[in-house]
Length: 86
Image 1 (cartoon, rainbow, N blue to C red):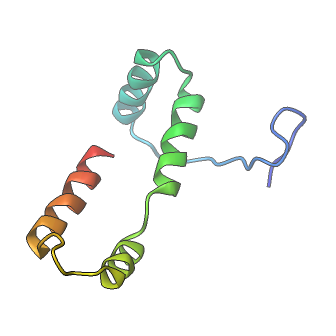
Image 2 (cartoon, rainbow, N blue to C red):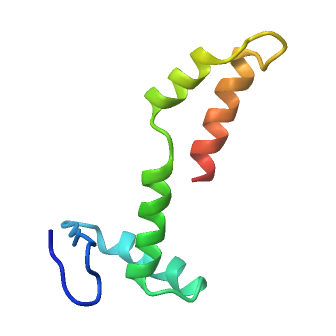
């Protein structure tokens, strides 16, 4: 883990071979929010890390009381909507 005086306890993550078009789009999104690219990507990575995995979603669904709850189709639609929103 890379550590310095400014980011003690934070890891350095480096991503190689990112297409220039992707970087331009990400920089534009960061700029729209008034953020640096690094700050924007940190936020996106935090959201990604906090999103439940497919296995966690399935496990939660199996524990739910299915009486009066959403149908399978409604559950699938909600999962797809959540994925598209993130």
